[in-house]
View (cartoon, rainbow, N blue to C red):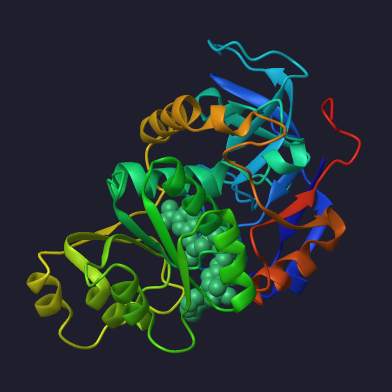
Amino acid sequence: MLAVCVDVPGGPENLRVGTVPKPRPKDGEVLIKVHATALNRADTLQRRGLYPPPPGESDILGLEVAGTVAEVGPGVRGPWVPEERVMALLCGGGYAEYVAVPEELLLPVPPGLTLCQAAAVPEAWLTAYQLLHLVGNGYAGEVVLVHAGASGVGTAAVQLARLAGAVPVVTAGSAQKVDAAVALGAAAGFLHSQGDFADGVLGYTGGHGADVILDCVGGTMWERNVRCLAVDGRWVLYGTLGGKAVQGDLLGHLLKKRGRLITSLLRSRSLQYKADLVKAFSERALPFFTDPHQPALKPVIDSVFDLQDIGEAHKHMEANRNKGKIVVIVTPQNQGGE
Ligand SMILES: NC(=O)c1ccc[n+]([C@@H]2O[C@H](COP(=O)([O-])OP(=O)(O)OC[C@H]3O[C@@H](n4cnc5c(N)ncnc54)[C@H](OP(=O)(O)O)[C@@H]3O)[C@@H](O)[C@H]2O)c1
């Protein structure tokens, strides 16, 4: 089968479409014929050799796919049937024509979504759902500050916060990205590159601050984060795009707010944890994607690339140009009933 190979870790030019053996579904796994995958920042780190897959997992890049069921492996207990449209959260292996997935990590594609849209759902939306509900414990009425509000995870978090009755506010790197997040439901947005977003958040909330901060930036933003964190607020760190080092009185400021700094990674979690997350998301969020005319939740697609152009897709992401998800079509003819 065709797959994206990285023979030598490095830049986007090191991504090569080659031929590798087709996986066979093991006990409890379903083989998916992939229509599309979507990019994640983790892919760019793995390409550079900085984020290896968990032990025993595929070393092919790609954390999410949508496609059709090609084969149901031995011991599968769920209702999955050949040709069914599915999407899946992966530990790796998505940049390929076929991927074998534990059945617990499969989700049915909601009727209103194409497979191209569905490929943009699993990683970003499950991450956002987990951060908001399982890690940050956001409640209705609380203010949730979402950094990188127009990112893949950010566009999902804004919509999920709204759905939960919380008040999402965002930061972003351009006015166009702020506008995109506001169009999705953000109550306010601030440029992280100009002025001080902490003043913006404190001003917007009448001095209360953000009850929850979903932070994929880290280092460069810590002072502003802790300044605009509400008393008893939860600051959820899930990425370090702005660096890992912190200098200064972080602990003193955090203590004054009785703030909680919580970190989270999804890929390294156990299969059981991910299965519980997929179940919760399927029951409580997936139904809101279904209305084809006015869905409460919708995946935001920035752009669609062909598999042969995977290097260009990575460059696009690393230049911070995307608003929403970058989708890559793996098997154009596998439309799965679209
Ligand atoms: N922990 C987990 O379980 C988990 C799971 C999935 C993703 N993640 C992390 O979540 C983050 C977002 O992922 P994604 O796939 O949604 O990314 P994405 O769509 O590529 O968006 C990332 C955005 O972050 C902003 N950004 C980049 N560098 C920045 C910096 N130095 N300071 C401030 N903002 C910066 C840029 O937007 P602006 O132009 O608005 O600045 C960029 O477009 C990544 O760090 C990823 O590794 C973590």
